[in-house]
Amino acid sequence: MAIGHGVQNTDINAEIIIFDILQSDFNEKIRLSFHDKGVSHVAFSPDSKFLISIGTYEEQSVVVWDISSGTVVGQCGNNGAINDITVFSGQELMFATCGSNSLRLWKVEEGELLFFDIPLPEENLILTALEYTPYLNAPYNANLVLVGDT
Image (cartoon, rainbow, N blue to C red; front, side):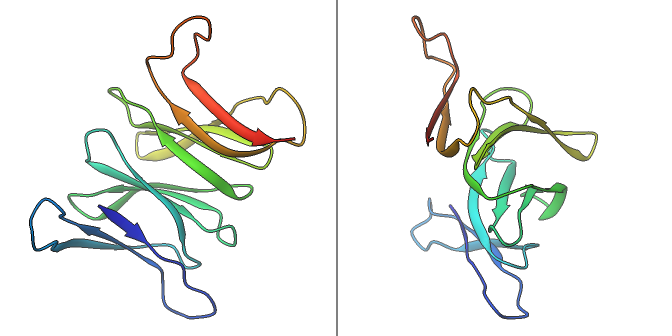
């Protein structure tokens, strides 16, 4: 289990704490520190080797961590608030984020965090949630479900 916290008006970096919840003592395993304005979202990769953390609106950053070493694998700024994240199953570490007028696909390639903006069907969409499934069949034949307001 991973938790992140927000920090306002301090010189202390926000931390992400990973706990082992399978043991009855809930031991803290590692602390990760990068975000200076707080953490709004965290998500594990399907193989649990990586953790993705999203900075708050004030910071607008995306960070991918190698959990075994506690090091940053890749990091990138974002052009607005991120409201949700979903991680794809598969061989590569890929994930998507959504926000105001924003839907992005992300992946780490050769130590660099890359993104691709997906064109939205209309302007001024505030996407509030998204989820991925490889099992959504006809008539939808889609893998990404979006929720938002116009």
